Length: 431
Image 1 (cartoon, rainbow, N blue to C red):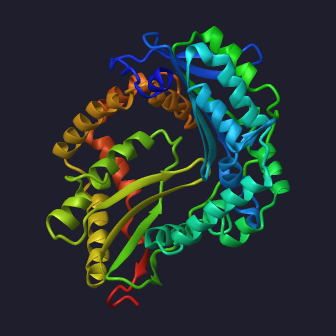
Image 2 (cartoon, one colour; image 1 turned 180 degrees about the horizontal axis):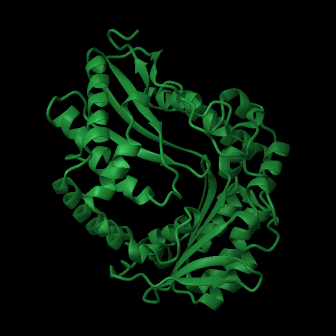
Image 3 (cartoon, one colour; image 1 turned 45 degrees about the vertical axis):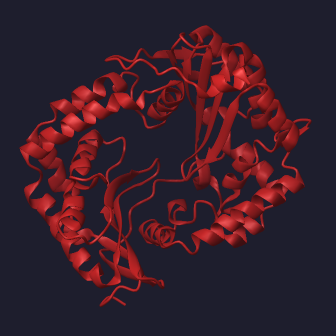
């Protein structure tokens, strides 16, 4: 029991001005970023394998998601129950997740059990069983979720927006597949997806906790023994194709969901951080943003509204979401265009910029609140293309932004005439 408690009671990582990151290269050439924290005998390790659902064919959409969901359902000579029992015995927590752009793996373990846990994880990554009963059970769960999604107006709006914006590209299809494609997946498809999505040539590794660079390198080589060198090829970049206009998807109910947006900015663009700051002023999803103030606080047209930079590995857009009464949709679209035009023409004020700079630089250290979050950030930073010192320069970069720099970006990013809307509901006057 004490060993299990130790997994959940994490020492708060000291919030400090500098995060000391060590670049680790294993004897076999694997690269990782490590933040050592020796006060608690606990280690977090995160892996990101780029590709995810974008690697799938249209006919097998959802196969990477199903495959990933089965990685902890038995491996080697252990069935699902035995694998779970061994995880409990080691007091480790493993998670496997698939998304549009990647497969991610997280593991947390006590230092004294490092080798045993790594062996256990390697078994899941190299010898998943994909037993027929586990496939049937997990596939049934995913199909049930797909049926629920088909009745969710928010999901319908997001899917419709993507299908138009990225028509013909994997970004334009269902990340988790359809009932038809998932229902047709068999064990052979899962084995192939496992070989295609998890490979040494496409991994980013972050670690934090009670481990040295030398020990981490040795553990990584131990973990990756037997993992394929290369995986499936990544698809090409996705161009944003949606033309300005409005698409209505009928859906019964008193409210409509509105998805809106246009082309965005790539995450490796030198001005991406500037765009992030601008959006936090405009549509960051909190009280006090331009959109929240205009549509909720002043007019009560929605409970919440947010805009976000959807900048994936293979394509980018600038999107927003809200729900509103069917009677209000027409005025909401008008107000959104007006707010967009004001940003495009006038930008932000000095007061708005100073306020968001204070907020963003103050909130950033709170992300580093334990080994688990730090390991995740270390892997994510590499995946997103940041340099190793970005975490220590990020706040200074935000503080150094001038009003002219921010507004030059706003004038280029916001285009009210390019807005594309998807409305799921019964909007009055737009049916």
